[in-house]
Image 1 (cartoon, protein in one colour):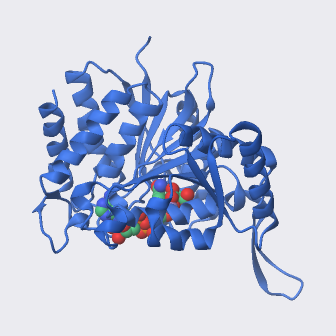
Image 2: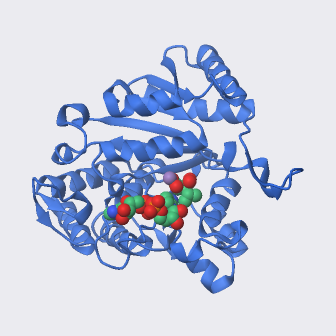
Length: 369
Ligand code: NAD
Ligand code: IPM
Ligand code: MN
């Protein structure tokens, strides 16, 4: 097989900082495990706007379409807040998701034992937690038409966004959740607001139909998304796989982040339908953003981005054992007490910078050989 291609888009803020650490990991796999990647790097977000006047050029979009996997840091920053919507850094990311048709966004929330006391919830509630949120990523209110701000008949400004889902869009993300559940705890909880939204009623019906016809052996439950947020904080271990729409998934995955201790811990994989080679189109990125408040200070936690690369090893490159190795290396440095600033609590630990954390994970990989 030819060397798989990996397109790296570091983006803005802490994106390039955490990506520098991922590059160390990629280099390690090349040198020590003979896993070679054809790596190229390009611009997305505010940095692309600064250079090209758009948050994603057509050339970069085409490269992403051709890559075996894309790895993205983060986009955005306060200096871009007043740009027209079509030029905002976030549009670059949304275009990648939409045009690559990455409808299934896997956001695992795992609580590493070493961080169980650090979560804002009690140890008992989070210790051993391992849940997977599957967020629909290419439809819903993020993309529905009509949208925009206009002046209405009363002369008032009016903002409009539209929640819209077709049954095929719901069915395909539901299938991806059931498939994952079969390889995990065999349980799916679907979340919507069927009590107030017609699209939520359709969501519930279609998920149930897919279940009954194709996955009757998987345990399925339904929950209103607001109650789901509450249950995630009350007793998150009741869940295995959660499947939900684009906006609710965005909110619920940030909630889930805090179960693991920090937003700096949560990776994600955005997957499309399988291509001819049997692998999905894929983009991997941390759940966190560009963190303008800490950018440029060496404080960012690179683990979310490093664990996103582990997901790439697992879902794009058939290297599940190497993904396990990388996750174990992260677990080891956390168990040794190494803590970036976001992980420092009253229980202490050894404070480390972004690059020290990356180096320690590389050392833990070395120790695993
Ligand atoms: P954010 O995730 O950037 O930051 C929220 C808080 O978490 C901040 O206090 C930040 O310092 C902290 N944090 C985030 N990641 C961290 C890490 N790796 N290590 C340590 N601390 C970390 O969210 P925000 O402040 O709401 O948004 C900032 C910008 O990022 C906005 O422009 C937003 O649109 C963008 N954003 C981008 C993505 C993405 O690229 N996927 C995701 C979310 C937000
Ligand atoms: C995320 C982010 C994005 C989203 C933004 C940056 C477009 O918050 O990936 O969670 O809302 O999907
Ligand atoms: Mn988000």
